[in-house]
Amino acid sequence: MTVEYRIISIGALSHHRLWGEGGSVRTAHATTTLVSDGDRRILVDPSLPAVALAARFNERTGKTLADVTDVFCTTLRPVHRRSIDALPHAAWWASEAELDAYTRRLEEIAQTADRLGDDSESVAAELALVRRFRPAPETFAPQIHFYPLTGPSPGSAGLLLTPATQTVLIAGDAALTREHVQAGQIWQGCADTAAAMEAFTDMLEVADVIVCGHDNLMMLGRKWL
Image (cartoon, rainbow, N blue to C red; front, side, top):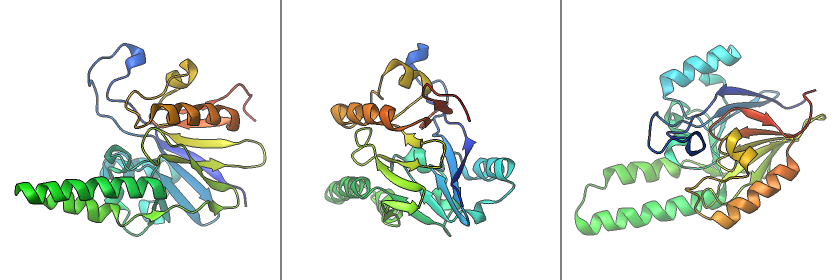
């Protein structure tokens, strides 16, 4: 068996600074990708609303969301997991560092809400959802590998696919759009700018193909095979 991947939905930014946009002009959503190896089907960043995602998934694969076995989120930012509740049957994965950081933040918010007497139900629901995730393994299958890309968020990460002819990196917010990669720029909202720039540089050395976090896939100086 060889690993296969397919873009389910091409993402978009709420505003694209490199297009000269200074404020939100559209609804942001992340690029959603299906990675398949035999009977294992990993959906990366289920970002569209559930109804739209189900329709797009069928259009792109001929299958339904019930056929997804795993979900991997490159970050726990809500826009990257907007429709994860539509996949309760699948195993949910994210990096351990991302899970730890996000859980700590939510626990701090919950404690503050309790002290102030604020409604903490939404925080508790978010915390319960995040606790359903498992720390991602180093390898999902022989050609599907967890790949740390720390910087955009405390534990952001991607999937490195290693079929025989290409190295493919599903990069999440480490590669925001084609224009960002071509300009050598990282996301302005990064949690750690220095780490994000290091991850960006490493990504350019490793990948033949990059699946951007809010754009289509792109080649890095090589011909399609």
